[in-house]
Length: 324
Ligand code: AMP
Ligand code: TRP
Image 1 (cartoon, rainbow, N blue to C red):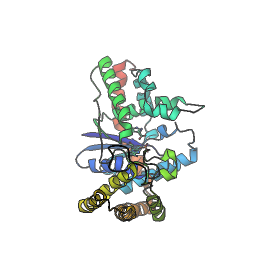
Image 2: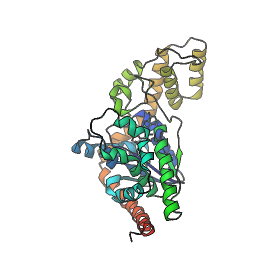
Image 3: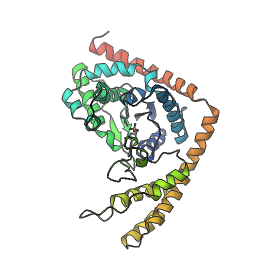
Image 4: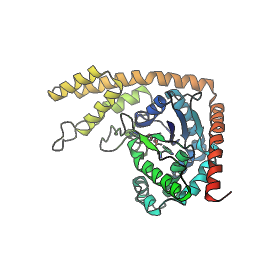
């Protein structure tokens, strides 16, 4: 498979990103051609992005990704803006994208709702995302559930380009992981996300005490709706437990829950213990990588490899549409 995926440099990597996407990125490196991108052009659509923070966030995220197991020897890891062909393809693809489709994007509608100033980049965001993927002729894209609509649009854009200019782009398929939609511990009706504030996510590299505090105070006592056997908060804790603990441990907690004997405190303590056991090696590796300080070289080498592919594809695209 030809794999492409991207992530925004917006500050911290959280458990939703990790279990929803990055863990798959790492696993897919085995036997596939993988291109992974830190999408800083996309981050500019966020009005609160401060220039010097963006620069730091890119490097921090690169370190996080390497610590998670992205291997720059096997995969291409690079920063989007180092390969300007992304924006060139974005423009060309925009001309085969339906305005109506863009106006229907849920993420756009959510982000634009109630805002006085909505920048054009936010509207065009999915076209740039399609360009990211198609620039590497990727056929599979590991993402969380919130990106499925953007991927469907990417396929529509590819189809329309192919129809107008001849078969060229593959129609990329999503790859969903075991936790395509992890929820916030403070409000289990909303997805875990940076945009709702620090109470709504657990950062991979956060201090242990903070992680424990967030798990300890996780909402468990929301009422059940008819037909539900488990409140959304408890279900989310079980989802997390399944990701980090052995099957027999999960089974035992499920049995206790069914018998009405489950103590949430025990569930939370066990989750914290297994979660930290799973995260500690990553956190350790993060410290080592930071000390080594080779991040800029790694990203530069990644950009060079990415650009070689991008240039080849753009050349072909320009010829097909009549620019060259
Ligand atoms: P972002 O931080 O929005 O750039 O997202 C990076 C990746 O993490 C994307 O593939 C998202 O779909 C995925 N992701 C973000 N939040 C969650 C979540 N709460 N559950 C599962 N996946 C998520
Ligand atoms: N929109 C994605 C997100 O917020 C990030 C992204 C940009 C992406 N380009 C991509 C994901 C290409 C997959 C493929 O999570």
